[in-house]
Amino acid sequence: MKITFLGTGANGGLPQVDCDCKYCRAALKKKNKQRLRSSLLVETKRSRILLDCGPDFRQQLSGVGLKIRDLDLIVITHFHFDHANGLIELSGGRPCKVPVLVSERVRRLWKRFPNQEIEYMVKSGFVKLVSEDNAKKCGVKLVDVPHDPGFPTVAVIVSDSSGKVWYSPDVSEITEKMIKEIAMIDVVVFDGTFLNENTYPASKFNHLTIEKSVDILKREVIYTHVNHSENVKEIENFLRAKRCLLARDGMMVTLK
Ligand SMILES: [Zn+2]
Ligand SMILES: [Zn+2]
Image (cartoon, rainbow, N blue to C red):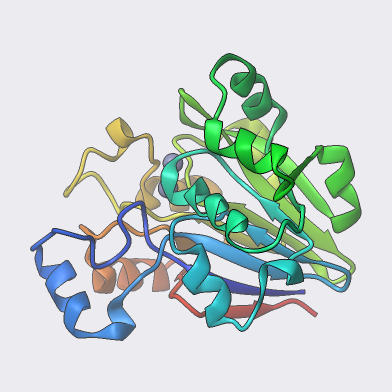
């Protein structure tokens, strides 16, 4: 299995539009400091799966030389705009009925608050919503995780014979169930929005800090979804001592 980080930034990416902070200014000057919105491409022996489809989707897909029709499945962790707003791009070409997996909790919520863009895409044949049962053949499993109470959120597990990957870019707490699942995982990709509460009240924004999750998980973890406010050097130094890693756009990991 091969995983490619198509984006490792939080909701505003880096540089964030209309921000003058020193990290956004530095990223404007240096391309290698820039981060697109969080998204992971997972290529297993059988399938090519995109985890999250945010507003940078078009650029991310063409950046790795792929077309929409090359994807076997798109999975959406939750409907915050930085994880789902790229879905509208699927209506830009010919109707190709890309299978899109969202959790049952999200579907139930739609019945009460229909998402008009997605309704349109499904009705016009651009998107085919599939059930979790249906996605099993791609080796995909969803696990509910706490994040924003108004937006049901999942972690995605993708497995093949080479191993298992866990992807949860947005998490506010670590539950017993998550700990049990993560014990079976080879590569864990986790919420790295904030190092600690020094720059932002992370918990108020429904994110668990890196410092806290490192302490709870006590294992090798790759962090992603970094906010523009964070000192990347400081995070990298902190994580190095814990045998963990901060992802960068374009980074690849192969499981054999
Ligand atoms: Zn996010
Ligand atoms: Zn979120």
